[in-house]
Image 1 (tube, rainbow, N blue to C red):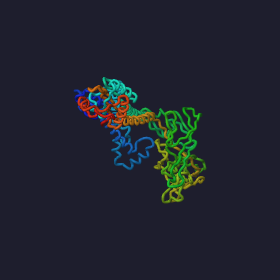
Image 2: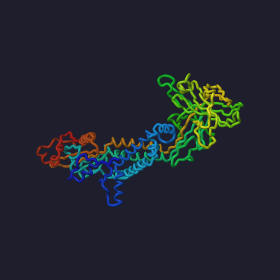
Image 3: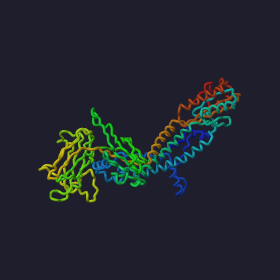
Image 4: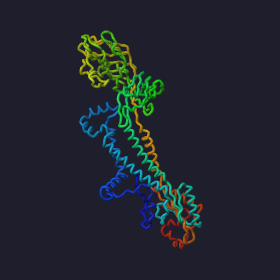
Length: 580
């Protein structure tokens, strides 16, 4: 977005070509900071030129960076953020109303963030179009002719030769072309230009940033995420009825889900067993078989690991968590099985101390003939501590070395028939009564294979074992590839614009009053760099192979030469001198 004019030295007022020669940027020049024209149209033109200027684009980019800061510091509404967002609101109750009004919990979809984003988008578009058109014109044009006074250039060398001027100019033309310059022959001089990749890199950076914004916007408008917890041995179909929760966008809804599914054959988790990092996860792998479309008979094997999702059509399946599901069997007072199966418990710490609720909706009736429901709330401990009277139920290691189930029981109405949605991992105990064993709360600590005799004749609960579960996030984000390519191309363009030098070189060979040829070589770069002087010196040395320098002219000849009066370098010895 640079539109700086580069003028190493003030332009010569007597030289009308000096300003054009010294201008190496193809960026359109900015107008004065005053409204253009009169009336409404003039104000519109002024506003447009301000919006598409470099300083406003940089300001918008800076504002966009500032606007994104709350999105990284404050939990945002979205998939897998409910728990973190609820905890943050509970800890900062005083500022929650203000943050909600400012939409700081949904920054990236707020109107003020979108306004900055759209203005930056328009500013980039308004900058790219004229800059590209200007660059096309530069590519089609010939290098500018040599200024009348080359001694004013920041890099300059001169010497005298006995070779004819036309031969020197022809040799300079061939030499510059061989060195990769774009060359144009003029009257008594040769003009050459090189380093167009600098402006190409600059334009590539602009186009890439534009593509990056398009990719991010497309991903935000046409993306969706579905979450699902799957037990070992069970499957998942990417349909409305199967997902646990769904977060869509303006152009991607619940009916746009890609058609596929998979079965979780097994889950492997490995942890560090010794040393200071004991308990640290080393491997999480979900072994699955998946299908595409509606045909669930053609299964393909695959694995899903952290940061290695399964790609199916336009969606990616990410592994985002895992845990344990204790398997229990509940019998009523008559010995009839009223519940059997695994129930997922959610981890509460790094050692997989897991909390959950087992709900028995179809228990039947109690001893008085009244309809009743049961609930069991407690902890699953993969490696239970021997004694947790002071600390409470706690696991010492995330792997199932000594899996135990610590629970208590409730009887009453779970209120599942009220029509109000309930969290399957939480217990609504408003219409429930906690069972007691005498004056104490009834609770049990069970190992695999043990049975708990429920108080008050409610039957038994048997702890049969456990299964593992894995939670997956199915993400559909179509603009990610565009954003990635745009980001990589922007870096490449920035490298080109920073390290490639745009430079011009002129060679002029004219006959002097003494009959000898005065050879002048001058260079101009967009940035001050010693490389320009080195390149000009190399060129001068090579050119002297075709136009050897002669001894310095006599004092009388020097006084008669007009070029020598302007520059001491014009009377340089055989080895050319350069100045910067």
